[in-house]
Amino acid sequence: MFDNLTDRLDKAFKLLKGQGHITEINVAETLKDVRKALLDADVSYKIAKSFTETVKEKALGQNVLTAVSPGQLMVKIVHQELTSLMGETNEEINIKGSPAIILIAGLQGSGKTTFSAKLANYLKNKKSKKVLLVACDVYRPAAIDQLKVLGEQIDVEVFTEEGSKDPVGIAKKAVAHAKTMGHAAVIVDTAGRLAIDEQMMQEIASLKKNLNPQETLFVVDAMTGQDAVNTAKAFNDKLNFDGVVLTKLDGDTRGGAALTIRSVVEKPIKFVGIGEKIDALDLFYPKRMADRILGMGDIVSLVEKAQEQFDKDEAMKLQKKIAKNQFNFDDFLKQLQQIKKMGNVKDLMGMIPGMGKAMKDVDLEDDAFAGIEAIIYSMTPEERQNPAILNGSRRKRIAMGSGSDIQEVNRLIKQFADTRKMMKMMSGGGGKLMNMMKGMPGMRK
Image (cartoon, rainbow, N blue to C red; front, side, top):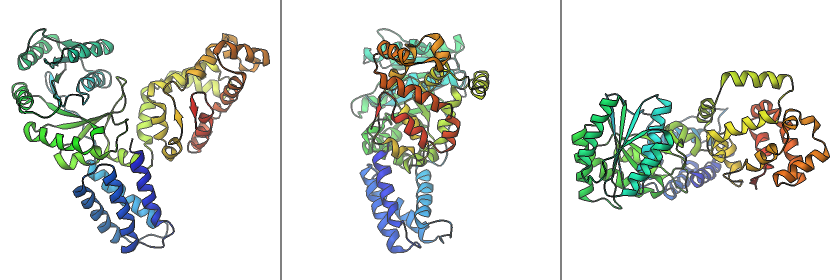
């Protein structure tokens, strides 16, 4: 996500490295490259030009402090303007109502149905709401089936009316059902088309008029770049929606939609989809996104993800075991499983300040921990609880049982010893952690 833009901006700021002060000449050279970086990220020329002109005006009006280099000052100003461009602050979804009705709109293939289920999962688990999903894509039976499967996965009821081609009628019956059954929120998944057409626009407009939803969210595929912004504008002109959802932001996206959609439609980005898993949905925070674009990491989001998996009692037990040097492979395995629940490991590492660049050339497989888990599961309960007994013959047996070689087993046992110093490593900024992880099975450079 944004890797190319981050690299281009980093190179642009290096033009000011070693400069004693900001001048119109060195600022112009830097911002020329910044503008090119934005254009390459599929930001419109008009917005890129306006952005760099604003940055230039602010940069030339600043006095460079002794403790701050021109390059650092430029990064600060660009960070402020990126945050402003994307909307300054996070805006929460409106779920007030009895029930709250949330209408989902967008083109076919944008990820509406998957997002609908992700949002239901978010409201159920994060907001403790009883949710009803409504299948109103009456033209694609596969979409209805997909919503049923996803609803079953997250244990959320899906309302359908087989054979009906009346999405407004289905939605009205669903809302009535929700009131009867005590649902706090109703999420209406609607039909999309391969392109904007009048029939689709009339249908979604009719749904909004009849349902009077608390929230109308427009779902857009971030990988379509500036086309996504143009599509959002067309929908907003017709629907006056409340917010934007950017899906597939973890893919090979240049980031232009995330950067400019707010300024074009004047509506906030509320959620971003960051993977295929049902819990791969994040609230959108402009400042945090600016941090990541400029290679500063996103430590706040990383901590929040960790807290979601945090068990206070278990943590206290673990702390006591570490203090007594009793941390064992069973504990290590639990920690790996918690990390896996937090999301894609490479994305998580990229949230640590300074780690994004280090992760760029690292190939981290989706099942990066599978080899580690296989080795640990090949140990006996006694070996996992008392690693000191892992002699040569035991290690050889473990290697054979896990389909590994003896070098991988030895490496993991050494890395296990290193994890006892994890708190010290993390206080060092993550660099040592990175070196440790590079040697793990499933991770290579």
